[in-house]
Amino acid sequence: MKVLGISGSLRRDSYNTKLLRAAEELLPPFVELEVWDELKAVPPFDEDDELGPEPAAVASLRRAVAGADAILFATPEYNGSVPGQLKNAIDWLSRPVATSVLRGKPVLVVGASSGAFGAVWSQAELRKVLATAGARVVDGEVAVGHAPTKFDELDTLVAEELRDELRESLEVLADEVAPRPVALAV
Ligand SMILES: Cc1cc2nc3c(=O)[nH]c(=O)nc-3n(C[C@H](O)[C@H](O)[C@H](O)COP(=O)(O)O)c2cc1C
Image (tube, rainbow, N blue to C red):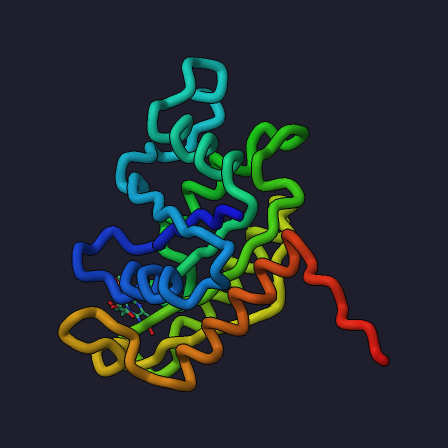
C-alpha cells in the first residue's frame, strides 16, 4: 500500500515535513510513504489556464495522488487557516470536478505549529476543504503544539503520546484502504 505525504510548508526545516518523516517510521509494515515535495512549483490556480496545457507541477501532483492509495497531509497554520500554497494545490486537484483524483481518496490530516495548539484550526479547515473536494477524510487528529520542543536534533518525534496518536491515526488510514479482517470470537 502506498501513502503519499504532502507537507503544507515550503520551509527547509519545516516541522510539518519532519512530521511526515516521523510518520514514515510509524506506518504499519505493509505501507510505504512517498513524500511529494514540489508544492512550491504549483502555479496559482486560474480557471483560464484549465483550457491550456497542464502545468508540469500540476501534472506531477495529479499523477502522484492518482498513484497513491491514500494521502497524508501535514499542515502548518497560517493566520488561523490553511497556508495559501496548500489550498491552491487542492484547488487544482479538485478539478475537473467529475474526474478529480481526490474523489473517494482516503486522506488523513495532521499538523504542527510553533504555538500551543498544533494547527488545529488549520487542520479543521483542511478537512472541510478536502471533504468538499470529494476526498474520504478519516478520523484522527495529531496536533503537534510547541513543535520546536517535540523533535530532537535528529528530527525524531520524541513526544511518546504524539507518536502513539500518529501511529493509531495511520492505522485508521490504512484500514480505510484495506480493512483488516476482524478476529473471530471463539
Ligand atoms: C504567515 C504565518 C502565519 C502564522 N500563523 C499562525 C497561526 O495562525 N497559528 C499558529 O499556531 N502558528 C502560526 N504561525 C507559526 C507557525 O506555526 C510556525 O511558523 C510553524 O513552524 C510553521 O510550520 P513549519 O515549521 O512546518 O513551516 C504562522 C507563521 C507564519 C509564517
